[in-house]
Image (tube, rainbow, N blue to C red; front, side):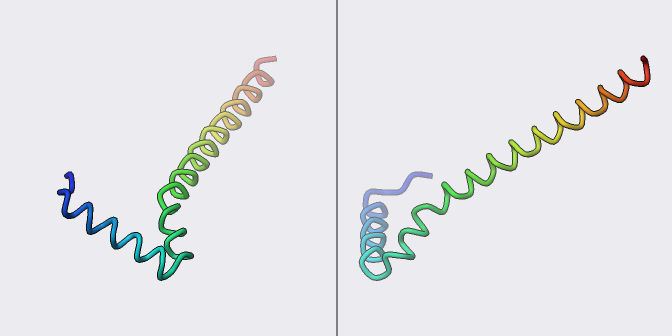
Length: 67
């Protein structure tokens, strides 16, 4: 849902005031979404690596049992 021009203007005004009043909080809020994305990517990479390690271990066990 898109914001109207008035809503966008008000939101920009609130953001600029927040930046003036509490710069640390404004910085944390501006990087909030990026931090969540990084965590999600790390989690996906960790799951993929774990699956590869498990599959490799199973394949090695099967190969050893066949030999």
